[in-house]
Length: 104
Image (cartoon, rainbow, N blue to C red; front, side, top):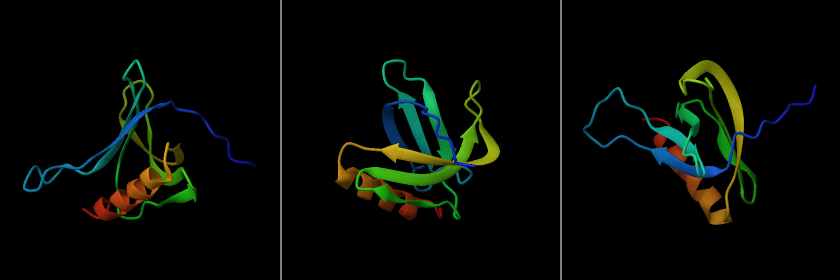
């Protein structure tokens, strides 16, 4: 069976990294909010075994925890996400940041 893709939205992507010396239980997260409504459409934490690589010049593929649609709480189920950015340099930077922070 071919994998199916579901579009979760267009919006602003952010990598939230807790401040040094802050709450040790907080982990780095990938957060995305939809344009105009600012509704959270992606909220997953980084983890050591996650995969994050370039799938094309402006495309990034990464694994994350699937999000409960109504509550925005991550579920205990892995999903593969494909992200397209405007510039190739943004894709390179995002992959590097994820790899830098996923082991924290």
